[in-house]
Amino acid sequence: TQLLEQSPQFLSIQEGENLTVYCNSSSVFSSLQWYRQEPGEGPVLLVTVVTGGEVKKLKRLTFQFGDARKDSSLHITAAQPGDTGLYLCAGARRNAGGTSYGKLTFGQGTILTVHP
Amino acid sequence: DTGVSQNPRHKITKRGQNVTFRCDPISEHNRLYWYRQTLGQGPEFLTYFQNEAQLEKSRLLSDRFSAERPKGSFSTLEIQRTEQGDSAMYLCASYRGRTGELFFGEGSRLTVL
Image (cartoon, rainbow over all chains, first blue to last red; front, top):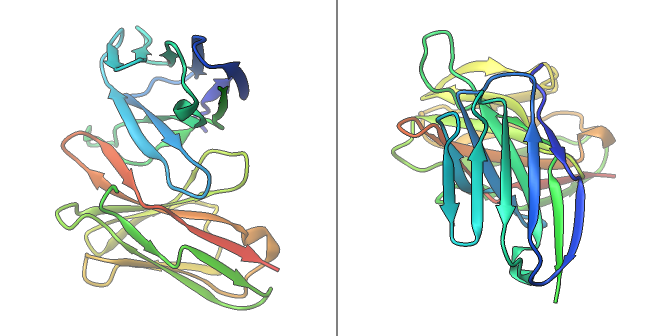
């Protein structure tokens, strides 16, 4: 089983602070996705990183894929209460034919609370 | 709104009853996935379809679970003789092969009393 470990599991911060969430595995993934999920809703895709060492920015969110494609991080600058939610990383691998494969391995998530 | 719709959104049932969930994916996506998410955990893969063919099933999918996608469009997930341990959020996802991305529906939350 390919496991993805996220840390921290819980994060409670004040508005305006910066934070980083980590996602680590001993396995290599062909790509890694980050999702945000609100209570009672399905996960919403934020970003997909594919290339080792890749960095993607989405407004105040910065995503990085490790050089070896085994780990990733999500950094949020100047967090706002609207960032509150469950953040999930999910790794994808290719099937035997080498094509992209939608069976994702998810981390257990990081619950972020940003206080006004 | 991801374009994936699931219903019902919530289902409360008594142990031993059967329940069925429906998923309508994005029309041009030929792959459809089912995941299950319990409280405090990330989603876990259950099964997926390529058009109408069910190509893989997780060991989590006991013989009480059955999924279909009869015409390669919508899909149903049926749980027979529900148990309290089946209580979870059941998530359907539509797969865009070009980018390898999943687009999840809002989920169907099952509570078994």
